[in-house]
Image (cartoon, rainbow, N blue to C red; front, side, top):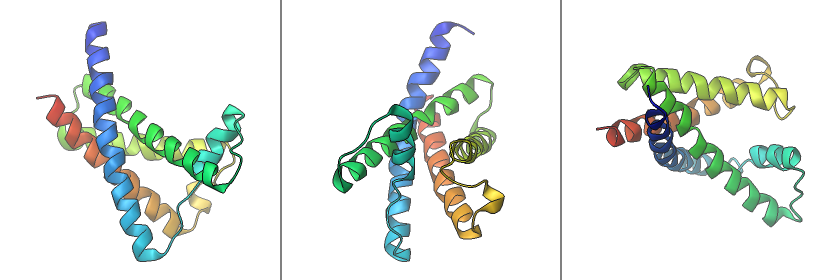
Length: 149
């Protein structure tokens, strides 16, 4: 494996991640319209705390959260690219990517005090996380496979 192979996998992963976060955003928008749930600022609040950034008002807080959402979601394409370097394709790559994204998200949010571990969350919250992250992983994997042809 050459450095160029890793760079290509990372680059394709970023483009695929952008497709994945777009699909996840669409699934979240549909779910919020159906359920009446408000958008979450949790990931944005977490990154604001980590970076020492303090959005001045609610509008800025929501804008920062949107920026974090799209950036974080796009970056999730990088592990998908690296998974392909291990020789996984199709359903196996999708399953590995989904497990990685969910595991890391649950771990990071818990480690930083943003959310409890999944076994202490309400089942509906866990279900929504699994749903939306699975949409992200499926769309990212489909886009990656298309870019890798």
